[in-house]
Amino acid sequence: MKYRSQAISRKHATGFSLVELMITLVLATLLISALILTYLSGRVAAGDAELLSRAQENVRIVSEYLVRDIRNAGYTDEVETTIGQDALLRRSFGAIENGDKLRIRYVGRGHCGANFEDFVLVENEYFVEIREGVGFLRCRGRHVLRTASIDTDTTWDGDDLNGVKVLQEERVVDLVSGVASIEFSEISQNTNSCGWDYSPTGIQSACLGVEIELGLTGVSGDVRTVTLQAAFRNVILERINNNIAAP
Image (cartoon, rainbow, N blue to C red; front, side):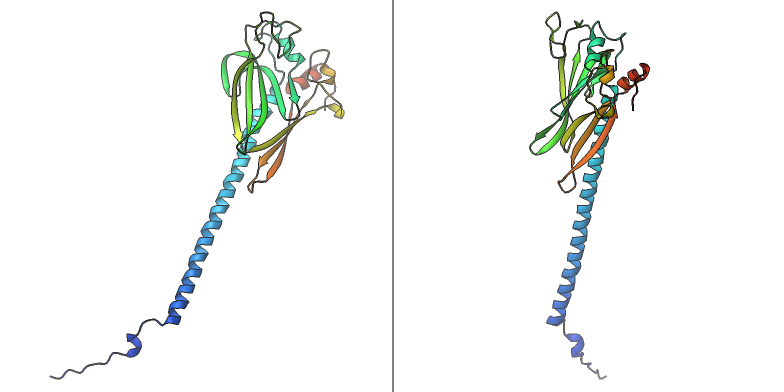
C-alpha cells in the first residue's frame, strides 16, 4: 500500500508577523488604558459623591445642634430652677463674641450631647477650631448647679454668695469636622441694634434670632458657604404676649 504525503501549506505553518504583533500590542494597550481611565474616573466620581454626602450630613448635624439650641434660647421654668436663676437667664440668654463664637443659655436636661437627671441652667458655646489643617465645629457645655442660689447682681462668669462659680465647666466635644469657618450675627427688628435681655425692661430691644454663615470644605478643597437662620422662640412668644410687634 502506498502512502501519499501531503505537504503542509507554508501559509498555515508560519506565525504572526512583526507588523501584526505591533498592531495587536497597540490595540491591547489602548483597551487597557481605556479600562484604567474608566476605573479612575469612576473612583473619583465616587469620592466626590462621598465628600458631597459628607458636606450635606455636616449641614444636617450643624442644623440639629445649633438651630435647636437657638430656638431654645431663654427657655426657663420657674418650678425647675432655683431662686435667682430664672431672672439671670432672662437678663442674659446668650451672646455673640467676635462674630465667631455663640453662647446659648436655657433650662434643659443636658448640653453638648451630655444628659442630666434634672433640669438645670445650661450654656452651650459653639465655635470652630482648626487642628492640623482640619476645621472642627466644637461645643463647650457648662451648667449651673441646680441647688445654687443666685444673687440678683450675679453675672454668668462671676461667683455666687457662697464663693462657688455660677457656671461649672462640664465638657468640650467635637460635633463635626470639615467646617472651615463660622460667623454669627444677630437678627433684630428693623435692622436696629438689639440685646440679649428679654426681661420686662429689655424685651423691647431683644434680639429675635441668629444668622449663621457656615464655611464647609467642598469637594475640591474649596470653601462653600451655607447660610442658616433660626429665631429665638421664647423671645418672640414673650413679645407676642406683651403685644409687641414682631416680624
